[in-house]
Every structure is written in structure tokens, then in C-alpha cells.
Image 1 (cartoon, helix red, strand yellow):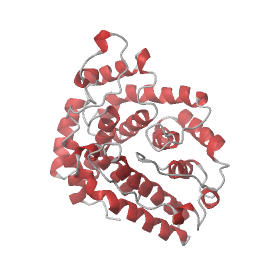
Image 2 (tube, rainbow, N blue to C red):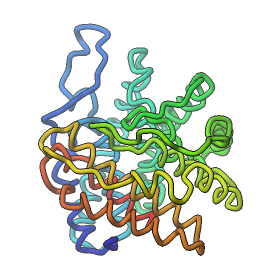
Image 3 (spheres, rainbow, N blue to C red):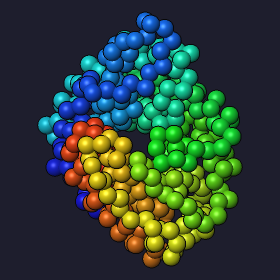
Image 4 (cartoon, helix red, strand yellow):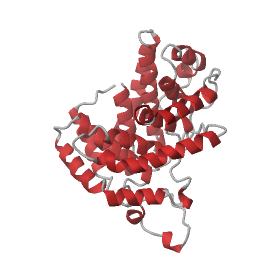
Length: 329
């Protein structure tokens, strides 16, 4: 797989900078409680009104801050910091928190956007020259509290290939909680163990026409995070054994129409699979199987790299998923 170098970082940064403050087109996912709630995105979400929808704006900011940290000398780093300084302000983030606290917002961005906001807050905490993490923390804590309330009520994990997927959200939330919230970390680990530890060999369908997540690989990625290192190889060999689904059915997806936002999800599936496959391979080293998993991951990544800055229906979000895969590699 191509390495994350300065050229690719700049390409991703330019793409994200081009849309995090682009208000329209916009898909708000907004529940109205009264006539007064009918307002434009920039008023509802003064910090995260861009990138077509709230969650894409949040994780595009995660992309930008990650690239700024990793490549502080690239020309775009100064632009990222300047825009972040005017975006992550006390007033704007207080408005975002107030929106999330509305009675009508109980299910807003649950769990996908919640998890990405935690990822953004964790990344912001690594920028010691700015107070972005301090400003984002109340919103992050609100969504962390949301997870602590939601998971005990979620009798059955959601295993779809889109935003509701439980395992994907818990992977990002666990990364945050492992550094910032031991209680939530334990809750996630207990939930994962209760729901996924005893799975049998996977034999199901793993791709739908608008999937951007693999149900089984999302679970595998979560279990790679939460299981003891000595236990994960046995789990993966049982659920995804050699000669099974990975070898016979896990092939890069093809997007027939990149201008169709739902169909363009399949480029994200290629990237999210690559992310999970690299994580699995890292846990299996030095076993011979790891090399074949990395090769499969590289095939998926290469299949969708050109879409990162292609049509807006993909370019407003795909860089984040490509970066997840690159950082795991």
C-alpha cells in the first residue's frame, strides 16, 4: 500500500480544507421540535456545518488535525490551524453542545457521529500548542455519557454496513476511552465480550449496495482492540479462518456511479476493509497469514485511492477513511 508521505498528506489536506466550511449541499439529519427549529445548517451547527453532513465535517476535521500533527511543515498546516482557531471557539462549540442536548437530539448522530467526535477530541488533545481539546471536551463528554446510557439499552448490536454499525463506533470510542475514560473503556470491552467473543465462522453476506463498512471486519477490528493479544489469533482463526470468506469473497468493491452518494459508499468500504485487514495482520505477525492479509488490504486501498478527491459525493468524506487505513498500516 502507498505510504503516507507529504505529497499524499497535502492532497488529503487540500481536499478537506475545500469542504469543511462548504455549507451546501447539505444533509442535516435534523429533527424539528417547532417552527423555530427550521434554520440553515450554519445556524444549527456553527462549528460543523460543512462537508455535506455533520459527521463528515467532524471526521474531516479529524483528518485535518491528524495531518497537521504528522506533517507540521507542509504549507497546509498553517491554513488548518488558522481555520481551526476560528472554528473551535467557545461560542460555536457551546452552540453545538446545546443542540446535542435538545430532547429532539437524543438519537442525533448516534453512534457514528458520537464516535467521530470522540476521535476528533482525542486528536485535538495531541496539539499542545492550541486549546482545541479543552474547547471540544464538553461535547466529547456529552457523547461519552451518551454511550454509557445507550450501550446497556442496546440489547442487540447493529451489524449493518452503514452509519448505525455498533462495532465501528465502539472501536473509535474505545480508542478515546482508553486514554480519557476508564469507565467507558470497561463498558465497551464488556459489551464487546458479551456480544462478539463467541462468534462462529462467518458465512454471511458482507456487502450491500450502499455499504461503507464490513460487518464482520468491523467486529474483528473491535475485537483486535479489546481482546488480549494472546487471545485474538484464536478468535480470528475461528471467525475468519484461512480458506474461508476472506479468501473466497472479500474482493475490492467497484463503484458504478461516483456521483451517486449511496453508491459511492463502496469506496469507503474498500478503505475500511483495508484498515481492518492491516490491524488484523499486525496482530498475527509473524504468522505467514499476515502477509496475505496485507496484500488483500493493499488491493482494497488501491481500488479507491483516486476517489478521495473525485466527485463531491465521495470527496467530502473519503480522505478520512483512507487515512485510517494508512495510519494502521
